[in-house]
Image (cartoon, rainbow over all chains, first blue to last red; front, top):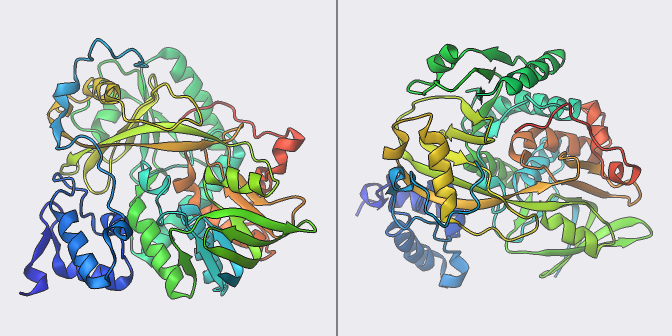
Length: 97
Length: 379
């Protein structure tokens, strides 16, 4: 399949070709690929793209998973409307407003 | 492993990368960047991306003004986005308006074109904002923002193409000093001998220097930030709510990034706290009635690497030859990075400083008690 037509990251519209080019340029860990291509920075929080990118990276470079630097998961697990945070909970003692 | 290089730079954050950039630009290519994690992994990739010269000490103003001259040049050469979108401080109390009048006067003395604006003028630049509680704003048209990821990565690519090497996942432990001369960097992967050694490792600089017998007064202050999903461009300036010292910026990619102050102890590890989301949403929902309907995408923490006078340490060490330091940016490292890179390259190559007042920012000022003075601390 044409790597230009294979989408690796649907949130940020990144193709397989983008990924392969980036790897060839020297972006050989997921933390750097995340900032360079924005994979994992969209609404899916990397649930799809980072796993795909990890296996491609591993195959391409023969690295093991530890060396791929899987980015930290940041909260929330999925995007959440800000209105859920309009009323502070009772236990929020250290608000500084 | 024993490596030899002319220049060893500890830290491949935006500061280390910019120092390397200005050195290779002058034909110095024999450089090794030593990075304990991956490039940008400290504060550089967690920052709010804002850039301004509207500070309250001559040192800060002059360094940032030079940076603002350099940002568009770097942006064009290395192909990343930088825009002069401005900053607006939102003032809701009379005493703050009075204070800012003095600050604006100070700025004008240093040719920083800030001005007091009316709530109506704020509304023109920031559609949909609720100005009900606002008395005035302070507008800085010279301020702006840049893409923090591409600013670092594209510049680093350029530096590597010119011959500089980057050692990632390599932790500098100490600097080997003999007869008051820095000679090599000891890392977890071996020794790197260098003619000149630059420490630009953020808060990590403290431990590396301590292991080498040099004290530097740095504190790591935890900070919190969130970003929403990307939306179409709504407003350009970064906004600061002065009464809570909180800011909101629509970053170039489209997300709204919010920073707000949480009570934190220096030198503690930041943890995510759900209260932060309540705080950020509360402050900015008062200004934007659509904000509750945006989706929060990500929440992360980072640090301000603080010095006692909230100004960075930049320059050579006064007693140890061939040792240079650039750290302690106190929350303003990204915006200042271009002029820091230039100044450090000038120190290293023995050239005249393009910002003469930068000489006040050396580490020795803390020993001599010559702290940098500000007319007011803000932002």
